[in-house]
Image (cartoon, protein in one colour):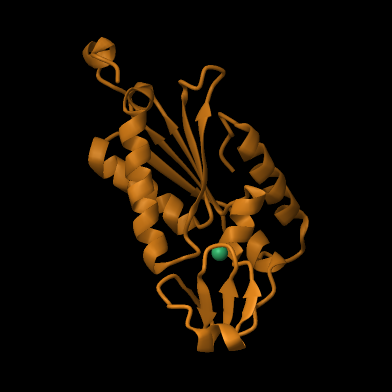
Length: 191
Ligand SMILES: [Zn+2]
């Protein structure tokens, strides 16, 4: 486990949930463990995702025929969003992160929107600023480690910088991306 170098209120919640996961005797991820398999079909009452033939889908139209036979439930992603828990944690650090925070947030939103369009369980739980004045970086919690990986991959593609990934025994991913502006560009116009 890498040293946790920055911590926001929300990541403390997540770390607590990871600790709970660690004391269980099996290795199944916390969320998979906590949520029962829904009745097939089911509809998420929060996001409208449909569970059918063992898969959650975002693009299934909720017809009256479907809602007549389906159970109403809360999908695992909405459960995690509600509890501010996640399977992925991304920490973004470096002078370039504060300088380009708006653009970085837009990029993350885009990546998350594309992911959840086909995989409704892949979602951003929260984006928080790090540091007392919120200028040390950003922390992103995601419901899925694949989405956390994707976000870092896309940011690295767009800006450069350095990425590291650390998969935990409980199936969660801790990823870090560091992006520093070149020294001379540091005082360049802020946004
Ligand atoms: Zn949902």
